[in-house]
Every structure is written in C-alpha cells, then in structure tokens.
Image (cartoon, rainbow, N blue to C red; front, top):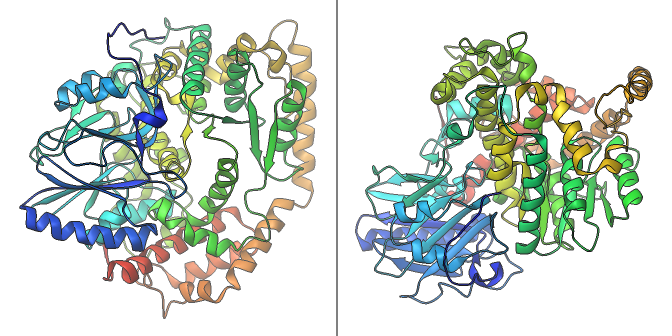
Amino acid sequence: MHKTNDKSPAPISMAAALGKIQQFVTISGGDSGRRQDRAERVRTLFRMLVGDTPCIERRAGATHLVVACTRPDEPQPSIGCGHGKPFLFRAGSPIHTARGDFDANALLAAAQSAPVLARALEHYDGQFALLACRGDTCSPLLVTDPLGQFHVYTARQDGLVFHSSSSLLLAALTASDFDGTSVREFVARGNCFSDRTLFSTVRKLPGASVIDLDASAEAPPSRYWQLADALPQNTSAGTGVKEVGERLRDCITALRSQYPRPVFDLTGGFDSRIIYGAARQQGAADPPSTTVAGAPGDADVRCATQIAARFGSPHHTVSPLPGSVNLWQAAKDCLALTDGEYDLLEYAGIHAVQQRMRQRFGLSVNGSGGGLLQGYWWELLKPGLGEQGDFPFERVAARRLAPAPQAVALLKHTFNDSLADHFRDLAVAVDQPVSALPNTARMDHLLLRMRVQRWQGRIASSTSRFQDVVSPFLLRPVLEAVLDVPARRRDRGKACRLLLQELDPALARMPLDSGMPATPLTATTWPAHAVTGAQSAFRRVLMRARPNRIFAERATRIQVLLANQEVQDYLDMDHMRMADLFNAEQLEDVIQGACRGSAWNTTQLGRVLTLEHTARTLEKEGGYNPAVRF
C-alpha cells in the first residue's frame, strides 16, 4: 500500500469536505454576455432533461458559470455557495486510498494550478470528477478519475468551451446531430468507443487529467497517471497474489472509513466473492452486508444466499424489475442518467436494483474489473501467451468486439469497411502506446480502454448520479498489483483461486455457481474438482434439454412492452424519427425475435428504442431535429 508523509492539515470528513453534485456544466471562453446567455439556456435544459433546477451558480476566473445540482434528497453543498470563497465539488465517488479520510484542505491548497493539483492526486481514486477553485480570481480546475470511468465531456460552439458530466445536455446545448460512427458502434455493441459520444459535437475527456478551465481550449491537460506505465515489462517476475489481497483489504478499509453503510455485491463467481472475502477479513466488527440481483431460483441468487447465511452477513435479494413495474416508463426515466449511451431497457433493471439498495446503504461495492485477474480474453493469445511482437487484432475484433452479422444489416447505411475491420482499426490505435510490451499486457490495456472504460464506465457514470459506487479491483493500488501478477498465475483463473484461498480459506471451500470448487487445483483437491466438474457438465446438458424459463419470461415482458401504444408509435416507420437509419425488414425481424424471447433481438430492440427516445427527447426539449451524420 502506498504511504504518505505529507504535513497537511487534519482531514475533513467526506460529507463536510465535498459538495456532492449530481451533474454539472461549466462555460468558458468568449465574453461575459455570451456566457450569461448560454448559462440561461443551461438552466432551462437542466429543468427539462434532468428534472431539477440548478441550485448553485458560481463565477470563477474567466469561467463565467459553474452550474451544479445536488441529488434531490440530499442537502445543498455547504462549500462554495458564496462568491469569493474556495469551492470543491465532487461528482461520483472519490476515495483516498492511503489515509482514513478525504483531505479537502490539501486538495484546495494544491488547486493553485493544474500541474500542482496533478501532483497532489497520487492517492485519489475511484470513479469521479472534481471541480476545484481557490477563489473567484483563480482558474477553476476540473479533474477526471484515473481510468476515466466517470465520464466527463466537452464541446465547443461559437468561441465557448463547455464541460459537463452529461453528453446529452451538451448535445442539446449545441444542437448536435448524431455521430454516424458512434451510432453504428452503439447498435452493434451498446456503447461508443475512442473519445466519441453519440453526438457529433461532444467528446469524452481522457482519464487522469487536470484541466484548467480558463486556459486555451487547445492547451493539453496535466496528467497525473498513465495506465501504460502500470503495465509489466515482462511476464515472469512480478507481484504475488498475497500482495493483491493486502491491497484489497487496505482499500476496503479506506472506503469503509469514507463512506457509510457499504453493501457488497455477491454472486456465484470469483470477482465479487474475492471482494467479499477481503471485506470479511478486513477486521470490521460487523460482517459485511451483501446483495444479489435475480430470481430465487437463479444460480447466482442460490449461491450468494448460501454464502451469506454461512458467514452471518445481512443479505438482500433484489429482483431487477418486478412484473408490476411499467418497463417502458422505467426505461424512459433512465435517459437522464444514461444520456442515451446505454440500452434503456437494460439499464432500467440496474437502476431498480440500485435505487432499492440506496434506501438502505451509502455505497455500492462491486467486483467489476476482477476478470483481469483471470486473464480475461487471454485465450485469444494462445499458443503464444506472453510473447512480444505480433498481436491478434483481427481475432480480437472478430471474436470479442464485432457482433453477429444481423447487427450490420439493421442499418441502411453502406459502410466502406466491415464491423470487424472497424474494431480492428480501433484496437490498433488503442494499442500504440504499449505495442512493445508482452501480448498479455497489451490485452489488459485493450480490455481496460475499450471495455472497462467505455462499457463498465458508462454504467458507473449513470449509477453515480444517484448512488455512490466503487469497484475495488479498479482502484490503482489493487489494479497495479493485479496487472503485475505473473502471467502463468493469472492464466485460466489460477490467481483467483489462490487469492481466495489466501484471503478466506473457509469461503474458498464454498462451491461456485457452476458447482465447481473455488479452491486451487492441488494433489488433494483434484478428486473434488473431477467429480464436481462431471456433475456440472451433466447439469448443463439437462438445462439445454429443458424449456428455458428465462426465454419465456423475456418474451412475456417484451410482448407487454410492445403492447404499449407509445412504443408502437416509436417503432412505426411512418412516425419514427430515426426511420432513415434502419432497414424496415430487418427491424421487423428484430421485433419478432424479441417477442419469441431471443436475447440478441431483445438487446437490438432496446438499442433501437434508446436511439429513438433520445432523438425525440432532443426534438421536444432541445428544440431541434437531430440528423445522423456519417
């Protein structure tokens, strides 16, 4: 664990130190009159798109206005409400990983310039954005989290520069059209890549950045961490799983001291179980509270319930969306959280779970990023695991990034390249800073940049608007240790079994959702592995032979959804705002497949409805009809 020897003043508690904000917009550049005009438009858009009236407005330096909204059920921030005073606001869930509390004094003292503040951010982690300023005559500074999980966006128009936690709000503010490349990626994969968003004028900011909002729009941000520097130069030497466990325990100690009442996701796999094991061994007086989402008969629910009962943890099983919930209304309500950049039907379930947990708990802790310890996607590197030189970009694009061909057929537009070629080119560009490293390090880098940052980060950004959330595996002390575990240990998930055994031997003896033991394969455990492996294979055969309850439930839910008159209007090609985008015959096939319970068609339907609802919202609340620009 990193240590700190600073002599800064005694830390202030998180609640007292940071004004919690739900969303923000900053306006810089131009003259004060134009900034004020745009500020009035921002106020209107906040009311229309977010459903809340801005509660704080500040002028700082040449940045005329900072608009911030608190979460509806929380008090307004006490810091930064008066002009001339320093302010420090946070969106998301920052964590100081090297001390027991959040040191707001040190951050404000360092907010004299972007380079100085960057040096002070060594131990700040999590998924967040910070807005800091020492006073109205100083330049306000914007900070993004190390991995860029909490999405922050920028746009320019008429000499003004905007920054915001909402790409949808910036799109409405700048009357942005849809970006055709991003729409293609969204229909295919459910998110956007590179620095693009769904909207042609809006770009995502990089992680680990400190931006001087008064500086020239062309000035590069100050960086306080580089993912490429954390990747190992070789695959043989490195950190042991014991070090990973120690850092996990230290980080959980830090987050427990800074956030009240955490609840830990618990499923039947390794990732959340390892986090739970670290929390159990971390030394708190009370066993950690746990939660799982699903139906009573689900393997995850059954496994998590058994574990919680075995170790005396208060446990909560939550159904993502009870049958009594109006799915379409719940989905539409989520647009203000997702900006249209995540499938609204899918996120409605996530939102329902997190909302119910939020009523009881102050922080949601999940196992996202744990796949890195299992060598996620490494099977595509074999038989040359750990080698340097050539990298299988085509294989990665075809097997992990480009979906089935029907995703291409859904769009009318004719592209000059295939989806596989498009994603291959994206992967090559992402790989450039680490192309000299072993292929395992390059795959980790690709996974973090193209999947964790954009897919997991979009979910985290949406949830962070109403609930604090953290992924301990993605905190830098833990992440750096995981990336440094030798490849032979991480391959095929061996490190996960070793780490769980190291953290909590009793927990390791509890079977996984597949029925397989969670213990390492040794001379004494191989008979149990062999027996349960055969039993697990037999169960999978039986499950394939039985009617699938999930298919039937999905089909019923979609049929109810499609009976909604508004949904019918959304999918009517004569009324559809995005009608020029989609192939009518293919869209009908998607609808019929979803009615039969097809998971792929249901996903495609959700993305179509998300794009259509985003377009209609921009038409109604933004006052313009967005086109798709290819």
